[in-house]
Length: 250
Picture (cartoon, rainbow, N blue to C red):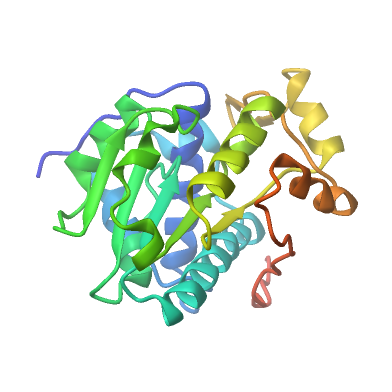
């Protein structure tokens, strides 16, 4: 396959930064995340990763790997009781969670902006249990694409996404999941308020890329406020990153 040149900017471009670090971690001798598909993706993309983002650091790459592993473990925990559940990955980017957690029975729905959806369909291996829907996570029509949500179960993930939405949009997504998907699980991450505030000044960068403004943030002590999004939110609890390894820097 000819290498593909991704034409992304703004929030969509951040998926290339996370892929870069995740693949770097997967290629280390003792990675915290086994992700061979990420390595294949990196090889098939015509993009100046090092020029744009700089050299990947052992700590930041491990952090990306541990975040993905944390999401994987949450999904696998849900699948243990509902092996035919649907996983809805909002803002999936070039994440490769489907291949990391696939039990041979789950169904996976990726919801991504059109330009990223095209990349996923072009670059990632096909499967009859994997669909990619072009659209915004805030356009709640993706809920209509879930087959038998009450019977099979649903786990929704929002990895590296919600911080780029406005607070009202985040509440709308949480409320819709609670109302339309009873018995489901929503796994999300957030940015702390101080770190998010720095991005809104337009001066936070990774390499040559300016980090897009993070409009929604949440400190750990505010976690309970998520329940106010909808009466159907039954429980809110913290997930902890798996243990990483020691990184020696010479």
